[in-house]
Image 1 (cartoon, rainbow, N blue to C red):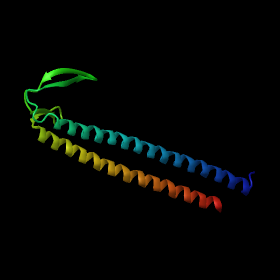
Image 2 (tube, rainbow, N blue to C red):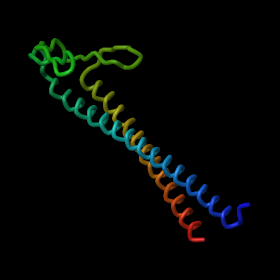
Image 3 (cartoon, helix red, strand yellow):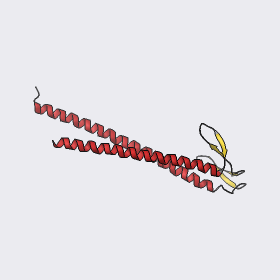
Image 4 (cartoon, one colour):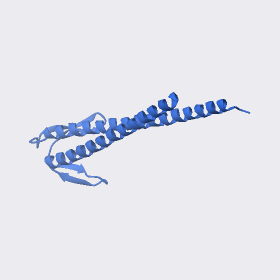
Length: 143
């Protein structure tokens, strides 16, 4: 029959495993949040670049341009108009001026910045939870 000391060590070992499992789960959550943050950052950079590139089209009506056909493939084309065909969601395309399109892109960037802020807050929250958990465990361990 196990004594009190053996039972206490089994309990200690079990709670240590539980602690490590929970800590591991928090670490995975933080990694996922960081991955999401990187994707948001890439989106912001792409949209910002697109917004700047649209400036190059201003005043270029009837100019020859390279129009992207697919991954790294371009066709020479003539810019017939400064109006752009923009996907506004739900596979709905509308004609927009360069300035209107830039406003749409700026709004998308603003929304991504909000998502980035929320992700940062979540990372801080989960990191704080992990810190408290570690502090609580080391306090128990000292007992």
